[in-house]
Length: 173
Image (cartoon, rainbow, N blue to C red):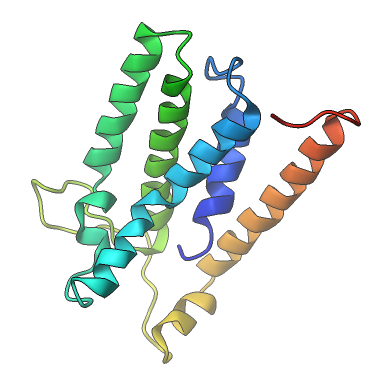
């Protein structure tokens, strides 16, 4: 997944706000925490390019280990349960949940080390054959890119619907 993480996280966060004991948190803050969580695993691209010199697949770094995101999610859910009126707990849940969503979305056509650090084996539902150069053209011309575009369309429609639902003079904060 190249461009689908942010809209996917936006959709999931917008649909989850209010259902996750987050009524005392603004929708904007909740969605921003979710979108940041949805793209956070790919911050490892800085290390990938600047330090590792593209020696290892960036999905093999700990920031792409589902166990890390599952652990963060469990800790944030525990915090949410223990501190119901906490302002941080729902934001942490949104962040961690969208990090897990990132792992699921990457698993469609990207290798994810689902059992890392215990098993050094990547898994993906489908593969993208290397037919074109540059490498990214293989992803743009693969059917899975249509899913990413569909996420952008859905996110745009949801954003527009949410904006229309807010009375004039109010904001989504």
